[in-house]
Length: 130
Image (cartoon, rainbow, N blue to C red; front, side, top):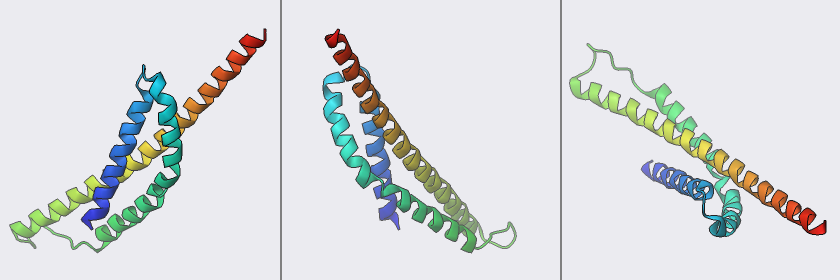
């Protein structure tokens, strides 16, 4: 089950890097090509949403079927394993939330940049026609 978390981590990292490159000021020459690449990658990255929902259901199922560990009923090693399992679930839930939020931000920012470029082109056309 570790491979899907690695894939999700790399996807979230790629989304964060693209979002950072898109929002850094001073990259106007690179921005047009970057917008084209990002707009083409948004459709394949949409698969992140059902993938995250599947992983979230996996976390919930593991939480529901996890044996409880009270202070008197477990050995220290069992208690430690129980705590590590809880921490991994929390880390994975944060990774899911980060991937979904970064996808939404990347979609929103890229659409806003496209709209701003279109408005700037209209403004230039209006200035040239006067």
